[in-house]
Amino acid sequence: MLFKQNQIWLVNFDPSFGHEYQKVRPAIIIQHDKYIASNNFLTVIPISSQITNITKLDVLLKTDSQNRLMKDSIIKIKQISYFDEKRFIKFIGTINENTIGDVNKNIQIFLFGRYL
Image (cartoon, rainbow, N blue to C red; front, side):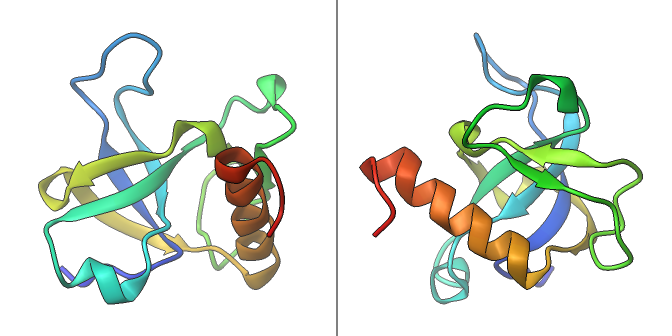
């Protein structure tokens, strides 16, 4: 499989523990392409269709022909995860440039407390 940054994949999050996201769900690969080829693990952010619980750091993702999601969803920035590539089931789509910018900004706020 050829994985790339900003792709959306269906990923198996089970088994999970505590408040971790669970089940098979879409997720965005956030790892830079340069580091994808060097190992078998990928850094992702889960996507949830439960948009009623949106937080300040979450990014709204409206369905479009590029991301090919079935419902408007949210990218759960605070749930950054790291998985073996064997958990990746199926390619779904990609996120657009505006969404990429919002995701990158909110990751920096979450990790460093500010936008760098």
